[in-house]
Length: 176
Image (cartoon, rainbow, N blue to C red; front, side, top):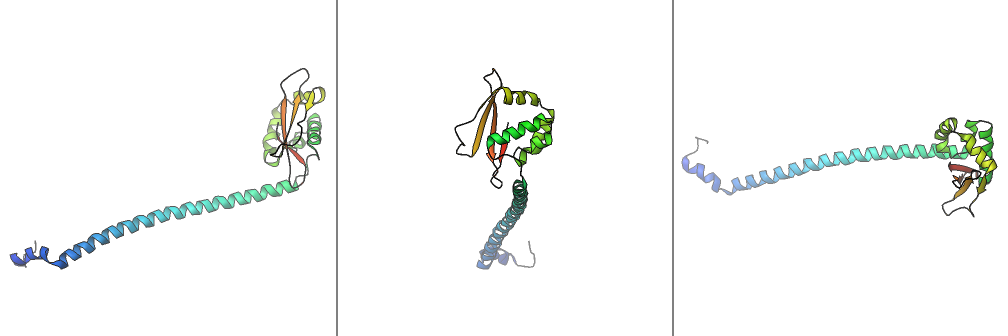
């Protein structure tokens, strides 16, 4: 303790209102500072999340723009789903897998090119020519057209799903 003050004055400091006001201000200041620093830290996290979200949004917009440009430039496909399927089979018969892959929707062309090069395409070609095609009664409400290709003397079909390119009005294969 402070020895310069007499014993009586040392006890009085705890009884003086200025001391308790000072303690109260110190406690309130400490609580405020702690909460303020916590808030600043939280804001830094939120700002970083906003920056990352904005960058992701910009990446998605660029990707969407590139995809739209690719769809606008895509001239492959037929005026009807059946014509697209016929063109696809003709490309397979010529073993022109690059051309055959162009009949798929733009975002699946590379993936299907690899599969067409590896796959057994002759079975599908034979099913198309020698089997039977069962088209649906029309385009579904989702804009998807499904054709079933049954190999000769079999009850299990290949399902071919097609959709229309909204920019060129050409039919594209969604999945085979």
